[in-house]
Length: 236
Image (cartoon, rainbow, N blue to C red):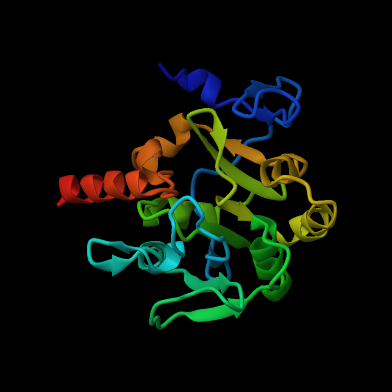
């Protein structure tokens, strides 16, 4: 059972430990963070679609969920939050017909940091909300809050089931140089984000915006797609 008191304390992710491990650091910055969204009109949602989709067996952006391309769901969540969204993709990424601006990321390497770094480079100093194209159940309420929060840290990253969610997270322009260096050194995504010393957002805080496990459901395989469809049908 989640401990709300523990969730409210600062989290420090230890990439050297078990990949799922999170440890509380009582010496971490304990300054208060506002629960009220600040003005967020300049925040940008970057929907990342440059992955190969190997486990899915097809490009994730075009896989259908409830008769629509999977990528439509995170884009609609961003619009429901009143935020501008752009789509990051490789030059050869298959994409459905969309009325969303597409930013082309470098063809190589194929690394999740490529799209994030590209978005930060082109965002003109705006905060970027990274949102995987395979996250169909992210709530507009959570995105609106992430867009408006004013952290001291370079990133704000939800943690669900003990796992950081770097592709459902906010990055300020201060994250660009460290993430660019991490990409050059081929650092794993989670370790790169942990090196930013972000604000980790625990499940007790996330529940204000919906079921954390549902919002963070990542569609990586046909089985995940079936699960997402079942959850959407249950809501309907």
